Image 1 (cartoon, protein in one colour):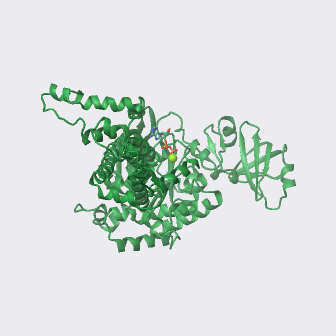
Image 2 (cartoon, protein in one colour):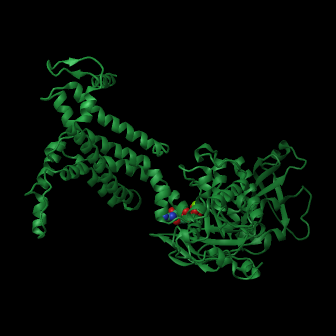
Image 3 (tube, helix red, strand yellow):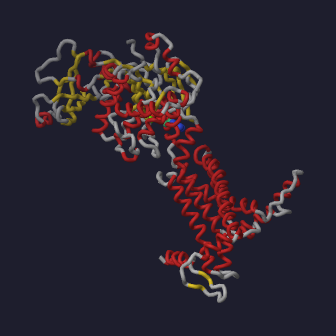
Length: 375
Length: 260
Ligand SMILES: Nc1ncnc2c1ncn2[C@@H]1O[C@H](COP(=O)(O)OP(=O)(O)O)[C@@H](O)[C@H]1O
Ligand SMILES: [Mg+2]
């Protein structure tokens, strides 16, 4: 206990330097399990106080990254820095980081209060202070007065909050969350998304949030990293990642994939480089309407129509080959009118600024850079 | 039902007494048998010896079984784990009597232990037919019964609990004390109930491997054997029952059954 805690070390640098310092920095991190490469060269900066998500399909290495930051796994190579300090080989109990586990990992033999106090207790914080801070943390997650309950007496959403309070009470440099809402039903999940984000903004701690749900990542994050096969495809704000996907994988995984390549791309842009465009950016022209200035356009047959209430989704087979999904708001259209379009010839158009040429990095032509946007 | 009725008869008959002249059972309730138990130092000694060795065997078994079970459940690879589980069940492979006679031979003055010590040029020990021999034999006999409940309870603890504990700053000894032991307690109590009650009730090992009597021997002699004082045997048989009841209550007090 005589050793200076990481807490006091953090506070020594002047405030502006402290803010510039990344909360977490991964440098060329690799992790292999036998023949499986789970993480394949990840370099990443997470800024202090930001809500940072790692988004990717199952098996893309998100959890492994998180576990290396927490200290449950040691990288095969590379460095993990926490507020500028190399923690690559430190045990979890020596890192100023707390995790919210997917299964919550609440201790069943302890009350809610004892669970939340656990971190303070093992650090030797006096009982009164402990109780006060635990009550405060429980108030933050709207569970005041639940101290004496057992975890088994709580609902899934309440357990989730206790797990969060148990991490927050330690005021760590970084809170790690591994698909914390995965076990909740849709309605509760959406409610918790809003609440989690609000809590994070209120207390200003750095959150690293792992999810495979693109909508969740887009709505909650300040910035996110899209992962695929152990690598980072792109890092950026939700708007950047959504509107300017830098690889085909990102375009496909974040939102609906609309990519045109080869002949179709040449017909639209004059070049055979692959482009993407978001379904909601595409207009369906009226019969005699011509595309406007700065718009590109293509013709095709409507193959499929799905009426979604507020929107209608059309799948259009293009004359030069390929297909585009078009999402249109149902402003004055009834479901009957929308469904009648099936099989008809249509002309599609969109602003050139909304289509994006993809980097050709995703398949084998060399590792994609960390994809950090220059902002 | 029949079993409960038999137990009830045992309970009642403990309060009857044997008429010393006619050797017939007097069906009147009284505490004569218990007064004898308390007054006669022989019986007190036997009771203390039985309970003491039972406790000693139980503590030793738990101390042996817990680290082994922890290793098998949480650290060992699958092949080593299988080897440990198999070797722990070894005592169950042969009959009870075979095992006891094996121990008698091993611990005999000219037995395996002293033969080995002799080969190593160490002083021989003479523990055959002592309480130490009984203690060793019982510890071996009941180890599987203590090991498996503890193993099962350790196996059931999710790995994320241990990670969460260390994530919140606890080193291993703290995690052991605050997370692992409390969650393994039902298994430890279950295992110790086995070894404790099996030792309390045994009357073969004490006279075979050792040279002393347990409560069970006195009960046997009185109920079925030469002494033939059935009410007194019943009264003495209630001693282990009472001890077990106290033990279970104590276990419940420390919360051993809450996590079940
Ligand atoms: N402890 C482990 N042993 C062996 N393989 C593992 C282990 N942990 C993860 N992996 C493998 O590493 C890859 C990445 O896993 P993970 O990080 O859990 O991905 P995600 O969280 O994105 O679903 C997967 O192929 C997985 O099977
Ligand atoms: Mg995962």
